[in-house]
Image (tube, rainbow, N blue to C red; front, side, top):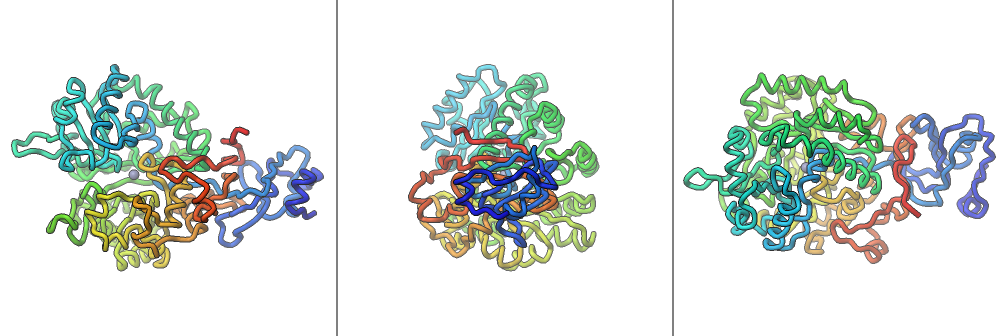
Length: 575
Ligand SMILES: [Zn+2]
């Protein structure tokens, strides 16, 4: 039996329901992009026990339609594998949004931002500290966060705010005192900027490694962790499936938070999605190698807690450098605005060699934040060395962001099987990036096409909450290279085809998570995670799309009709 789309919509489901090999679910009459290069397009799939048993057309699917098979009419719409976000902060930061306002991202100047901080303080008198995420360097007087500016709005309680890039903290005097008093060692890890007298000026350059559990007691934090945090995480999970994301890599778990994550799982928080967590390793951890080894062994042991939805114990997160906007990305050539300044690496080559030797020897995957070309080279050097020492195993060490790899280093990445875990929304940039880098150098930023051509495995994600979870926004930027100026003058030849961009967000992200045997494409034997779209993500770079949608950051609407995980519908757009 073969049925074309017109006859389906005119006459309804054509299946006789006498299939000899019934499945639980059949989706038919869909325009399926499978992300499977060997079999790229189809119109029907069948699912049994959560896995795909057939991919093809309606004629082939008929045998899988029995009396009890659920049949979904795809109505000719585009269907893709569930999107897999290669790098985001949905659990840790997602949970912390329970106490951390994200409104600061909407501020357009310093006064607006300070007013939001004051509002946050007044609205939450019982929280141990005032927190928020999203301040921009443009707001800091002279580009450097100043504690006294913050004291002017809130001085009687600690204020701790994360920058939009997630790297830098802006704190008030009360916070500086409290951090110093309660845990000076942990404060040192946050890299406070000091004045000539040794006092903290109010900026913490390594705020990405801030954990309130280092400074506030269990009793102080427990009320928050017990209910507000899991509620906030659940809200992010709901948002993920509503925009077609079915699996995510939360690249920054802290050891004291892991027992909470397990508790939340027991409460059903991951029932709709799949999540992998990567344990954060700080550049100071090598100072006590025995303890570091214990932590890593503990993490590997946590792998036994993994199930079909939650994966632990396999991957680690490092930072080799910071970001361009914070002028902490580590560069081979000096910053354009300051001769002789190359940015700041978090680890020396020797230190990073040593830590990668340890983790590669324990067969853990290293996912290292590396933005600048010098930072990227340092990570590749360490991985190359470990590879020589330990030989071939399926390491797939990742460079997170991988914004400025030199041509030679792209070749080395390909040779070593290293993976570029990129987030196209970052390519939107801002004024500071171009000022610090110089227009010339911007041509090699986010070189997606060059990486592809070099044979490097590239995957995509959002870095939420740094950019929206909705992958359509990143797909648009990957295929147009439009930047914050509304121009395409930063390496326009590096834009890529939409099919490649979708594969980077599906099958290639599955590879980044080492889950491609189960996830990432609609193929027989894989788990039935899929999305049916009411607006085709394959058309985002078309004039039609750009002329008919509001493209502003965070304002793209939800284009998903239905999201399924293991063939179970986890999101359905209300009619
Ligand atoms: Zn990140």
